[in-house]
Length: 162
Ligand SMILES: CC(C)(COP(=O)(O)OP(=O)(O)OC[C@H]1O[C@@H](n2cnc3c(N)ncnc32)[C@H](O)[C@@H]1OP(=O)(O)O)[C@@H](O)C(=O)NCCC(=O)NCCS
Image (tube, rainbow, N blue to C red):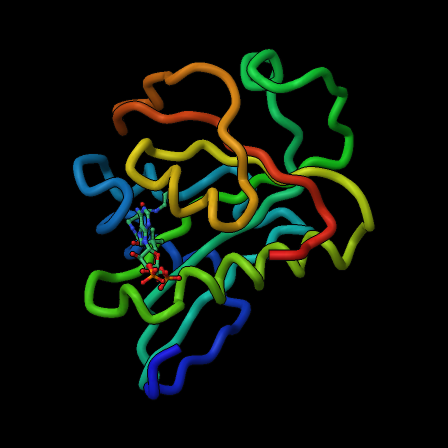
């Protein structure tokens, strides 16, 4: 971790939209950065602050994979599934552990509801190795995700042990 002080906090859904848009969906309308479960009761949006500025975000939703996703997974069902979504760190704050803190925060959140389950996410190919550091495993074939380029599904079990 850098000497810069960072803090993690739960943030409002609306606070995620600009970073999502800028880092993850720059070629889409801002409305594409509003996700369906943003306001759901068990959702957590974690924000990482550095010198008072929001520099990274990650969200986790209690969301079962749809049948199209589920067919890529080892045999389920997955009743207690959580989805990691919208992990993004602004360029100037990368490489000092912000992403690591965010992943821990969202996994702790899911783990606070139950001891067992799984976390899944759609991951762009250039981030597969990053998520693999946290025991996420790629499953199924490469697919085109919306207009965001090639992705794979990654999964990892709860409990939250980063
Ligand atoms: C991927 C991302 C979240 C990492 O955030 P971060 O705060 O820089 O990561 P951390 O500081 O926790 O970790 C840094 C370490 O991860 C490595 N790393 C960072 N991005 C990586 C990547 N895409 N693939 C492999 N390793 C990566 C760094 O080399 C560094 O390694 P070191 O610890 O051995 O020096 C950030 O680069 C980002 O927002 N990227 C663009 C959006 C994105 O890809 N999001 C994930 C979508 S699924």
